[in-house]
Image (cartoon, rainbow, N blue to C red; front, side, top):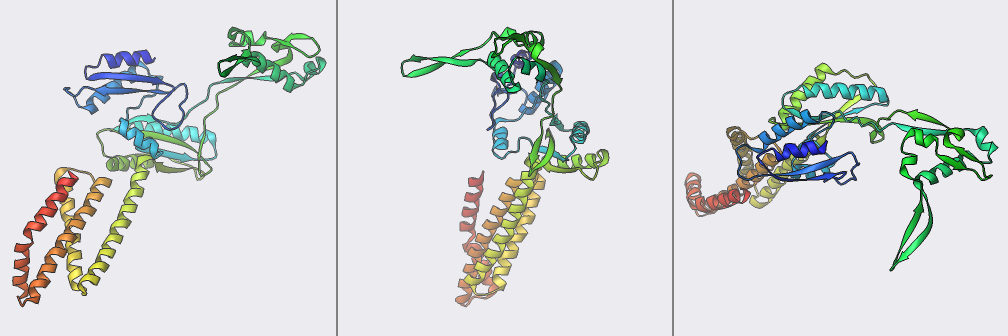
Length: 394
């Protein structure tokens, strides 16, 4: 299957090179043998942007290997997601103690959000372990040959996995010598049933004679959060910002998915991290405004002047919102940090100008003339510091 993906990457003109890792990835946890990743490097000079190339690769890979689940994260975003334990922008966590209900609702949620424009790389979070075979010992046969079920299990395990019978010393290292049967003798059910067993009494029989082979279906891999059982449906947005995408997603889920009282839905992933960051930054902004106002009161020994500077900083938010609207930038963590920095610059400029106004008034100038003189004398340092901060941010 991965050979087909390699061929698709080789046929894509924008791809400069790639590497494949099977059974490994950039995540912090150990990956299973049925997972892996491709690290793809695109050419610097290309006709299409990254999003267009990813869209084409996603369509071709899903068409060539429909049984494989693909996702196309950026390297930096993937690493940040792993460090914050938020592998995807969207995680819809369904909590319930009913495993059958979790499976049903996870599939329902995945089908609902998959139909939303801009939602890609949808995974229902249902990981089913492979089917297995269980050997149930025949107690009567085991007693007749002088063995217990534990002894039978040990005998079969030694035959399949081997036992360490000796060791070899080579230089300053010792290497174990493991004796085991040929893999062909137990890889299939037919050969496993005829695998010989030697009892302590010298009796010889097969696995079929001493145990009953039972088949067990694959079990759903379950995860827990705060001791609550859950299934997490995950997805990404393409061509849609996180805020608008989540608003549309919540509306569709409210119309299409109905949960019983014992089940709940929570939204995690990078969206949850963003909401927590917004709340923290809002608290920091309010705390900073209050502390700055207190410091200004202590500095100027009056309430009115600090209030004027403080209100000027609040009015700076109008310019921030206008700038975001003109440039088409969404309100995110970076823009909120920029707003906080802009308010800090306005505070600093206000302190510079008001301090000079107070200096001119102390020399006997009227308030209006003192303000004009402050604007003239402080224009250069205000522009210098503001432009320095702007260029530093860029």
